[in-house]
Image (cartoon, rainbow, N blue to C red; front, side):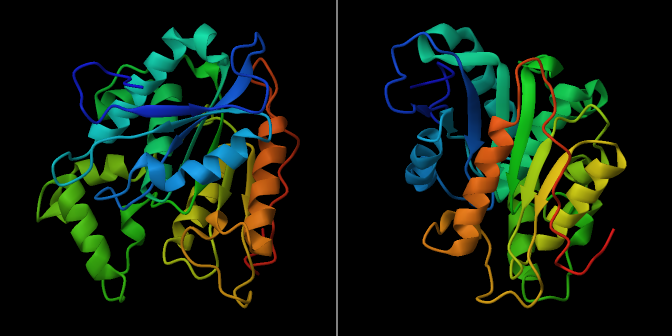
Length: 288
């Protein structure tokens, strides 16, 4: 379905648990933003995974957005905000509980989801991005954030991964001299989270080049007093867990991530109540 009439990229699909569509039950709705380095990807890439998630008892909206270099920051965040407006307007027809929305995403989609969650809960951040949030803070029950880039300052420019990140940020920011672009600070959402940010589930694999971003995001939220359930793995975990490890449901780690995600979502109760205290896996040796 099209969530914004004049935007050809503004498409989304909605998935349901068995025997729910067409009924009267309003369910927690997970709005998932796919990854792809801001330059690629489409909602079909994550459709199978999201249908499995929906079968665990949720409505799941799978959102497409425009990609770079044709669309630069913060266009995708504004588009996902428009998708939230559409879902809220059609909540009754879609069996959505508009007071229990969860923003979720993987890789680039996790940054977009986190950025929009922060804009919804922080008027200052909304002004920095230039959006009027489609939801009130009380409607945003939580976030699921997998393998995202949350602070551009963490990029190691002498690493093998640097070339890819240079291409990504040049494309997404729309400037070759992106390091001098003051907007890069706003993109680095971990620097701007507030105590109003919703409860978060955060995870990344031990062999993911972006794993440090997830640690920093989790720590930034916890410093603000936000409830965080973080799933990380020991440095010597074998086999090594790559970027987007969670999609491999044939692996023990992928299944663990799914079960922890589902438990987190079921813990989000009506009225914006937070889940139980976090169960952060400290087996990575970082300590408190």
